[in-house]
Image (cartoon, rainbow, N blue to C red):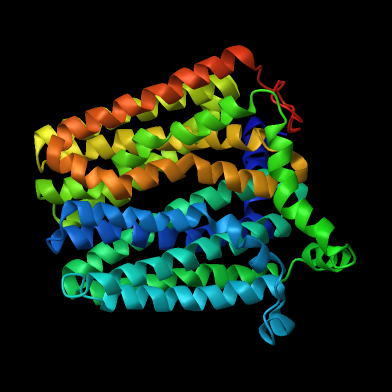
Length: 442
């Protein structure tokens, strides 16, 4: 066999896992999962800012994301309840997928129809409705993806899901901005409803997970008290009995405060500087997506080269420094190349950090409780930053100005770096190539 033939076979073997049914379905599910977040985050901020809404009111809408942090509270209902008729027709998982998809499309249309200046209360209600359904969509999508992937597909499926989420969020955000510039926000939000279709296509492609049906049947034989303890109490009890659990939880809670404050206020900065929606769509959404995808690729290489703990430390430093690029942009004004540099560095840093930090949070989970523990850890990782964004970010910007505000967000990232440094000294990383989760942190 020639060298070129061997190389071709090597590339084929590397790409083949991503073209199988499970990972392709994960990509489609990710496309739909990213859209609600985009319509609630940067897109809504842009709309409210250009409507002349007060900055403190605009940033208060970040509180809608707290519903994502508390989705574990109603996850058992979606996980176990069967929808009459619809579940009998398509299965329990796909029934919830269809119902929530229809609700989200209606919610997007509602948000687009509301005039925030004339009725800010109704806009709040519409945003909360979309946030609740978006969080519920994630519950179904995450469970459906995991149950539809074979064990050997988990790596490829997780990567495709992350790429899908980024593409879905960027695509929905860009489509909304372009249509809003030309046809108004009503059509822009209604068109975003098209992004629920990939999840429905995944339902047709993957079918109802057989393992899920068998698990529900087996669980029905257990006493009610035992099922409730396993679902709600055991995961937290398992985590808290480990050595160093309190220090780890402290790190998880505070490490993203600065990054969250900076990113959720970015569209306020761009609107204040005078960037057009077309410029935002090209650089913040389009160019930012490319930078993120490059960062994810580089993050994988850094993770393999440095190992988990050092890769996380590098990611934390990069994400902290990237906040200073926002302060620099605030001094430059509405210059497209400066926006490109800022967005490129920020999104590249986030892409690198996404690989390492998510891997670390996953490593912390006990395999018996992976879904519940990861949901709790991911909730803790963003809840404080989102709360502060919604309650204080706008007021701080009005008092301090954008430059000093972004310097403050950089300083707020330092405690997380110092705590993780302490964790690196006290707790060794897992052995290279060991895919097993630890029973404790030591």
